[in-house]
View: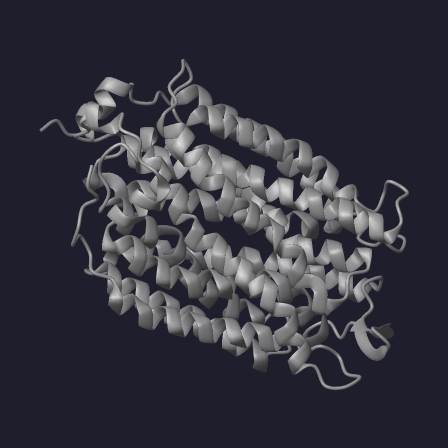
Length: 457
């Protein structure tokens, strides 16, 4: 049986380097979307609904991209054409989204424009992100997959770190961090512009330095019966043949990604209220008066910049913990410990009102993030063989998108139920709930059985 040879560190690095630029775009999105829509005038109880379309688009697009790339081969390769397509779309949308309040539109029109721009941005980022995971599955042998995904995790967190600190950095060098009502500050707009430029450079680097395995050689390495592979196979058949790891890891993923959806949605309001004492204003919604944070205040926008710093601290925690993870003898033990530490980080936020002490909470959250980025795909790709690697990874993306959709759909109702009459929405309670979800996810890890089945061809 012919096996994929070991590759040098730098070849593994080149395969994933473009992920650095893609992750900058993803970090800018995750750290600033709630801030952008709150600045445009969104009610805190409605913030989670703005996060519905991106994962909904992802759950549709990812399997399509996976299936299409499995059957694609051209002079540029199998996965790289889709990487280039996604990156190109992402760059265009990154230049449009932060200008949602600058085109002279009404508040409602600006929100609709921003919503569809967000959907396109998340879809294009996912189109660009997925090929990197697929190329590791395609081109790296089982012995080196752990290292390859660790490199990918490092680049992911390094890109996140840069994307998160951009608004704070630009404010520090003198770019305006406040703007007229309904307009996004220049510090955020310029962050998206620079992120788009870096994304182009990184993707071009991977495109010109990586040569994918040709179809015949690929079939030999992955033990593919080309006659059988030409038979029509639908998604339901593939799901029926999926290894048990696909489902058990997917269960853990459900609670993990729901938790992080709450973090992305509600950290800005939590930090503004607890650590920056942002002023409040009265707003009447559906005939009921209540308090909301004043999103035009300098304190709220400063809190938005600080959220980027906290998310950067989370990325640093992820990088540090990624070095620790390989020291665990069993992946499941590493998974459980990482999620439990992250849960502690989320729950501790409830008790902290100092912006610097929050660093500790987000360092702990970073431990969970490191495990979520690396371990699920290591567990899954080790259990997969055959010619459907791309579509399986696309389908597995459903375990990332579906929990985000459910969390976004229910988040507003949960927050509304927790809000006292006429009081300020307690967004910090949503982060405590995120911690509870991670604890449940840690418990679900015990249902995972590694290498118990190999997908049939």
